[in-house]
Image 1 (cartoon, rainbow, N blue to C red):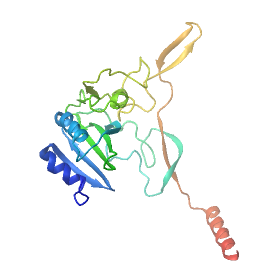
Image 2 (cartoon, rainbow, N blue to C red):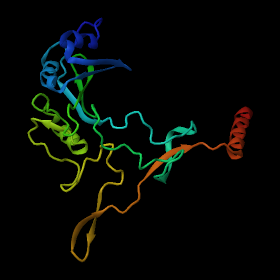
Image 3 (cartoon, one colour):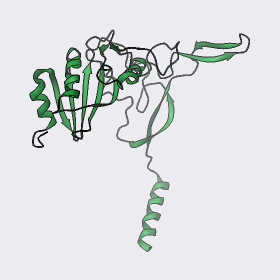
Image 4 (cartoon, one colour):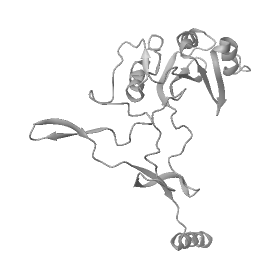
Length: 243
């Protein structure tokens, strides 16, 4: 591949309007394609020498419900990393509004499948995003016939997000229990789950029952300004000055 021509340019020249979006950011290239165009485009990405994406690294699902919305307000007082105690679901600064959590709505472009590809020949990576055209029953074509490694990845996305991969040879749950209800990675799935299991000594078997724990989430750790921290900082600075 000509080093002076970027991967993004090659993709747009080859596929034209089939590439609905092409973004280069942080040294990574992401394209967005329609689900109907995915099989032919994926095969071309694998077989054509100019691309040579012979290896599929991952297939994952994405739920864009509530995208860009924060679960808590921190007023600039939260640290960049770390979380503190769990709190009950109530409104107010630093509190998660359980009643106002994202819920299932008729949202266009809610679910997407994302393919991560690697070309060993050209030492290049590519991310391909495909939105599901219908949100009631999200579905996209399977790429297992092109990259067999997609088999378990697609089953995982089906299990956790409910995305159906049409043409998959054995699409069934892979992580959750046979009797699991719902899809755990959807944004409107309750954090506490829907049911819990326990062993009933009288019935001598494991039974399902409504979940008994209260919903709560973790809030950002807040840096509190008081004399203890100020004194510690002063002592540390004095130590380094003397040594």
